[in-house]
Length: 287
Ligand code: PDD
Image (cartoon, rainbow, N blue to C red; front, side, top):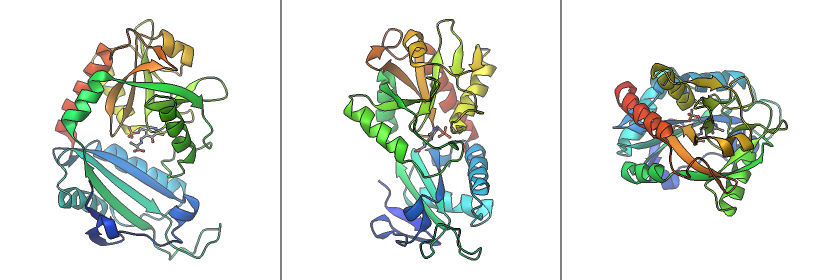
């Protein structure tokens, strides 16, 4: 549990932490966020997440609230104050607080910055990954700029809840062409019938996952067959394996989709190997 939160320059008890009711993140989802995995107290894939944060801020014309070095200090300090060894650190930056008006407030309104951190039981997480998860497919009703890591996550939340009520752990979202875009908070992958590792290309309407990029590098280093090409739910059903990637789940096997077992219905060797390699690499590369 996160006990200490950083809010606009102050560290304090999370239970009392609050932003203003006219914060534009709260009123308009006019905000961006990032999530870093924390391994051994250090930030995993630091550079990729930081660069994407800056891209998301720039895309929405939200002013950078402080220098990279200062922000990194806040992230680390929040991790430290919460005594997180393995876990996650969450950062949200909104356009700030101003009287409600759809138009941007004046440039002197400072962005709001919130940071929390929480521990994750790594042994429990590994046990979960060893079982794999099931997903269901749902239409992708999200907006057209899913490459920006905005907090406008209502469609994602609806699909996730729907998946849980359908007895699955997550939903994989399907676009108008019948192709899977991504999970509600993760990128989607298969190892297809020919043994090719496939994930959708990033020109499409998906978040450019930092874990996705790392896994692509690792798979290429291993000489595995790779293709950035989308796939349909039917192709997932015929695939040897499926898995998802994100900062909180690394690479996690998906063993069923729409109640149909994928491969032999158990976590596949490629996904398990990529998970191990990602974690090894993360231990070396985290800052
Ligand atoms: N979500 N796609 C979506 C829609 C996401 O929300 C995420 C991450 C990803 C994977 O990105 P990355 O590998 O950089 O974590 C893909 C975070 C973990 C979250 O919302 O908690």
